[in-house]
Length: 388
Ligand code: GLA
Image (tube, rainbow, N blue to C red; front, side):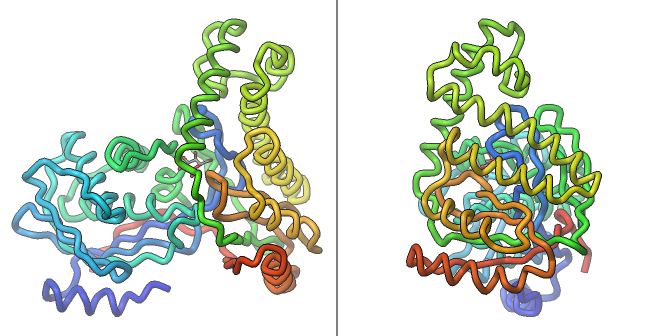
């Protein structure tokens, strides 16, 4: 839980006075549309009620000084100098990366000092890193006083992650953290970056996230391997479909006609991405017409596709999803995020939440020996600045 009083008191002790601004940026859960963002496709994430909060004040010099209630060390760097990655300082590097990307884009940044705290679980695939990046970008915006639209901000934060931190992620996580709307998921077109809020009526159904407690060990190398396999698929399919630049451009019908031309692994990867894009668009229509059952079935199909074709699930994620599938009142359940560990997302009837939260962890723990964490969440608002 975020303790704003403690953040303010630390701020007072370290820097004196009250923070001038508070910024917050949420983590996210993706409802459907997995491994589609870097294929120029569609995603449907929502922000969660877990976030990064920073209390900040401007400085007269060009230093950035950050303390976090979650880490013992301070992050400190000078905007007047070249910003470099610090070894062994993940959280600091997200902040440095954002400063680097903003500077590179031509923003003359003011220094700031601040105290932060986050309650997005780290390493669980709920985008704690995107939350830090988006919060830091907003902190610079607040203390420097420039306007920046949410799409540009998301792109710069993604650039920080890709080019500075060195993780080759797509745009989804930063985009939803920055641009989410309360009570809505966002349908994001990851090519045009157009987006549309899709109302999530949570009176009948709730989103429950289950952290498998399995850390996502293989994720970076496997993630890069999947990206490369998708590029191979585009190259081969492009011999028959001139002009395509991403798997987004291939319809399910076109794929079915050409699938035999692809080597097996490439075929499976492409089939996941192409059918997943199709599922996202169908899922949005089902949500709009109030068909939660149909939406849930697409979540289940998404999981099977990620498990069998994209091969990014794992025994813990599968175990959690299968337990959810057996539970009364569950409309749909799937792994969410990059995979190999981390979390599942389930949609379930509101009156089944209590039983689910009691039974699923018990059975999962008996089966795997791991102690899971469950979070029931509403779709939270996107990142914000508020003045003191
Ligand atoms: C990670 C990446 C996202 C996205 C998902 C998979 O969360 O950061 O950009 O690719 O994996 O959908």
